[in-house]
Image (tube, rainbow, N blue to C red; front, side):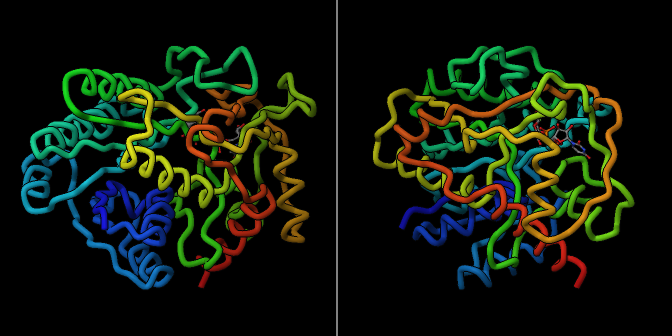
Length: 337
Ligand code: UFG
């Protein structure tokens, strides 16, 4: 049984990925510093899979703690999720983002090299493309100057990993996620936004639950079919499964370059209004919303060309926007209890 270290394994995408890894017979070791999640997520994972992953409360900024972890635990591969991810906060606290997202990656790569751990899946983002000229976006689309320190950390991280693969045995796959949404069918894990949500779906579910008075749609004057911005919303369980197949690609040595990139999305764009209508229909709820001015830094439209992931990983998203919006709402109701 292969042992996989999942950093940030109690976070939103991390926890769903741990479930899929355990379901695919990987043994999972989680490192998380609990800065943006809680231990209850470990219980949720355990309840779904009947298996408790090994948990280590470690802050990856603590180089000695990371070194100790690798000394004491032999792992075959790493999936690196742990990072700060709030775009707006990154503009206000850039150094925190560079420290949390870049220093930690360097420590991790150093320890992987030291301990001959050669397989890495890295959590990247479609943010590296900025507003692409051509839609849908392929992996060949040019990387744009980042609009935020957060986005920049993803670009720099990809470059650091690329450089590391040139001088070592490291093999890596960077998955560039589009917009992950929804939660596990069991309603035992889901997204846990702390404070006022910044992302669309948690804002929608909190509005439907009466926690927020009204949803603001940021911009009604975009050059799209209904004037609202378009994104590729992918069910987090589909996204989690992409990590499992990417890992299997590394272990079966099928990769064609030391570092590969894959877009992970559905291939379909949905506008903010379409998401709202789909949410109302899927859950039989009515949402309060109004159109306000654009949010700084937002792009008009982004959706993935998933041909490469389909062909090379044999992966395809299976769940629908409605599935994701139903699970997001059930999770919101669960959080009330
Ligand atoms: N939106 C609203 N109202 C809200 C929240 C969001 O109208 O209250 C809109 C946004 O303007 C955007 C869409 O809903 O058009 C999606 O917004 P999200 O914040 O959910 O997602 P983003 O596409 O802005 O962000 C995602 C990832 C980030 C990443 C970014 C790169 O969550 O990690 O893409 O563009 F950096």
